[in-house]
Length: 275
Image (cartoon, one colour):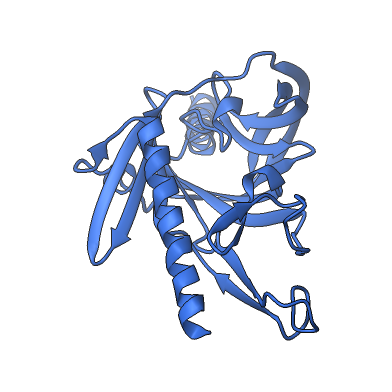
């Protein structure tokens, strides 16, 4: 009987080890390092309140970085999650020029002032219902000590044409599968894991049918999960506010544009008052 007792103990021990090794975190945070090429079509130069596209005949010579880098987080608990970015992401650089053409004119060392303006005139947060695969965008605007919140639901439109490669590798401690996907006239390489208990991608269109994307590579942008920390998150932390005003996606875009225009006007007035 002793050998049988010994075998039973070993099997029980292996079972416990197996359950622990494959336990999936129910809450936590994924940290992504992001690099994106700067899209000049989305940039604007404002001169005396007039928007001018970079590269046009009226645009002054300015140094525009080719890429931008930032950190993005996905925080999850149960069937909900939300995205956050570094607070400095999306800041502005204000460059003031004198209007004469002398040494202090445009481009001259004495006629130009650079000023970094961190942040936006609004806060944007993306929430996800992971069970229903729905995304809710919330914009918070604070003006004259008054805070207003608006929210809209965004549909999830998955790209088709996924091509699995059969290759795998470890990312942030999780085994990932490799696939290629045609997207935005480019080929994107996507690495995703099925070892987490939900489905998510930092680029919504590149969300697999099942799994969490931990790395994306293309000519224009790259995302890579560098750390996954378990615990210390509740569903209340990652659910959208219940009292935000519901608007359509077009209405929310108009609200954002107005907030940006108000901020530009305020900044221009401040510069004019200083001169």
